[in-house]
Length: 249
Image (cartoon, rainbow, N blue to C red; front, side, top):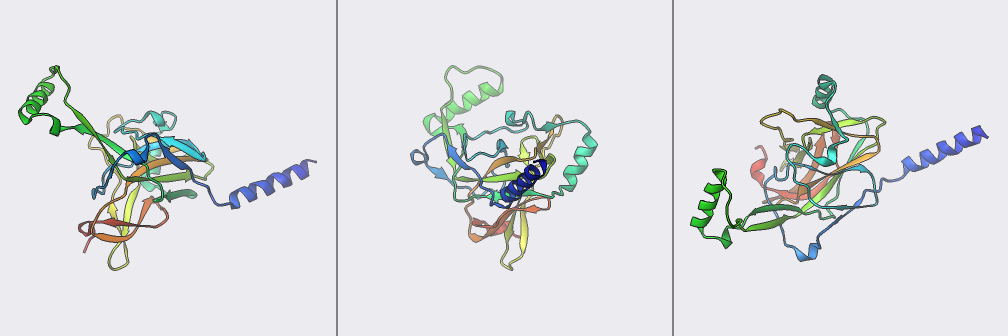
């Protein structure tokens, strides 16, 4: 009986891993038809911050998380022990079985909240900013506005049997590459580096977990093929735009 059980378990396992990975559908809490999505040509816009980390699900509801150095979603994934070992692994970034899937068919908006200077006089705005900078409270808040940017999800899937470092603070070490006019791949953007690393922790993706970041659907004068790199791992290629000023001659 044990032999048959082992055989069926092995057969099921082989069947499962031979199947195409089904990546999640991300649903946004706000109705996409009710908002206007802007585009940016800034290749460093958003900094590849973690929006979801955990086991794969068919549908994942998301709402943009803007956190610079620390993200509550990563509480169970931050690592601090054996720093030298962690640092060495991150510098090498050599993975055996991580998958990166860029899904430009989906829209996962990034939201930015800024002061709405169209609803306040310039002199009043300057006075309120001066008061805030001096540590004083202001009687009436400065009007705010929310801008939504057109972005898509990038899903990283750890199919290895051990956890792997993929970033630090709240930023995944993804780098954008583009096919230039000579049909050669060029690195367009590097992963983010903090000016001050005090208190910054490495974070891992555990076995069978996925990690999700949003990236902007860039505007630009050059249409080409794009892809993302994490160490030695490459994503699928996709069509997009960038400004040709980012390409080396």
